[in-house]
Length: 125
Image (cartoon, rainbow, N blue to C red; front, side, top):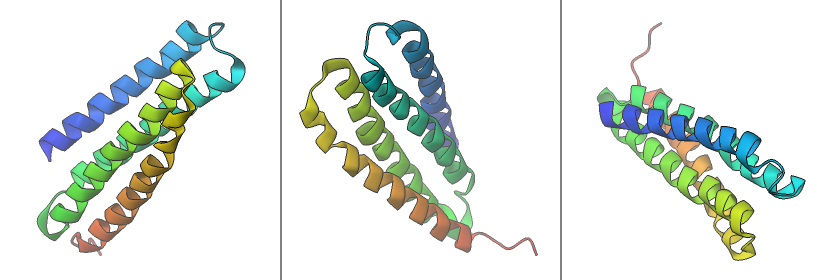
């Protein structure tokens, strides 16, 4: 649980740095469309770093395995989805866009696994 919470926090910090880099370092260097692509990568990285943190906190009892798989899926999604958008924006290599849907699928799998993990957590009712 600790390592995944740590990874989530690092992904969040890097997301903030990349968002700031886009706003301050890339503004004026990239056209508006590519800047938007980069910003989308940073935004989704932040969403899913938070989701990874939630998955880390859910890694207990019977929910542990599903929550761990959710965290792995979120990390894979950040790498594939956000990473491909960053590289696409910076290099213009359209072939990288082929990785983006795989990252999106990993995000969806992560959310499904997190939902399944939630059902395994003890009820507080």
